[in-house]
Length: 281
Image: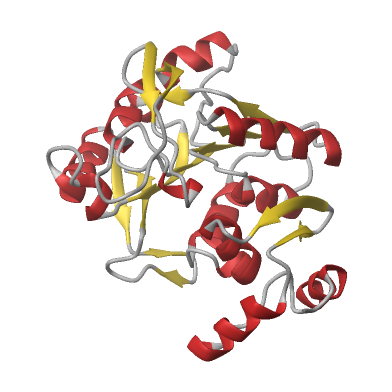
């Protein structure tokens, strides 16, 4: 087995990711490295990773290519936004990779990471403290339609499957009651003023709870506060509620946002895990 430091150094030399290797290459790769290790996941930010979790595996191995072309699109939107007002909202952040990537590329960017899972939130706090990330602001709550408490179901084998929605196809632990706020109430609590022109960027990945999160964001969306929104749209999770992925597109259109299939030089493949929305002109 290769030493963790050597593995991480090779990854850094490859641009903080590894190239695609094919099925047999992947099998050999994961057998050759430690199951757990500390990694400089992006330049200047170190985290502890457990490769029994697919979110850790994907972000470590593919880096900026993870969920392609999500990260370059998010970076493009953030760079284009007016600097004094631009913010990144990582809604359903898991261990925070998207925030770390953008913060490493745009020093001084403030990123809010919303993570309802108490254990994962403590991990975010540890990463913030160990790396002295003053502009990284984890929030231990869910964003929904109304204020209150909801049962959160932690996935036992892949943290990325954890959800407010109980799934029969995923092994889930006992529900944990967690606080939920509408985004509109949260920005009022935080005394955040809506920007005068589109300046905020959000990635929303809440495993089937997207439509409720969006309802709580309606005032900010209708005010065109966001320059771009990346929204996970999987039939497997949207089938947990009525309407499916098409209803999310209609919902975004009702708030004044249209889906785009190309951003700058990046084409968005039809059927991509994530959908990308920009405000109507």
